[in-house]
Amino acid sequence: MSAVSPMPPIDYQTEPSAYRHWRLSFDGPVATLSLDIDEAGGLRPGYTLKLNSYDLGVDIELHDALNRIRFEHPEIRSVIITGGKDRVFCSGAN
Image 1: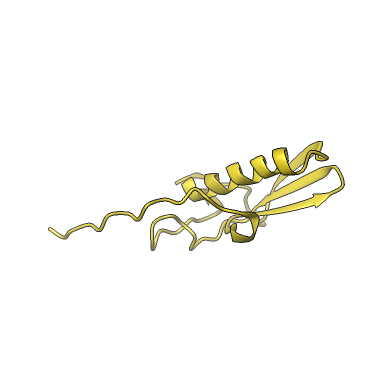
Image 2: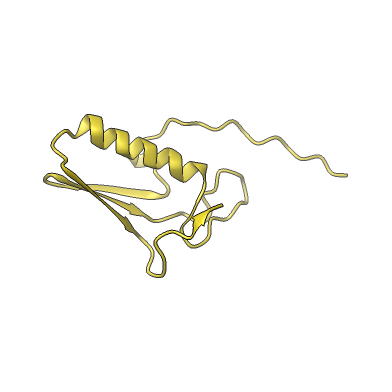
């Protein structure tokens, strides 16, 4: 039986310049969040996120983006959430 190495601790701190899965942009009172998953960006090393699938790392970035919109950009009145891939918006959670 092979030993499984423990998963490294999860860092919940992030910022837009470090996002691997979301693109955030602003145009007047409108913010746009585009889901564009980095397939090699799963939280576990070697874990592939296919067809814009979702894991905790994607959720951490989404949480950060929405809080930044809410607290750092009070001028925003609408948020558009869109897919950054041609074939699919999001295939679901992994």
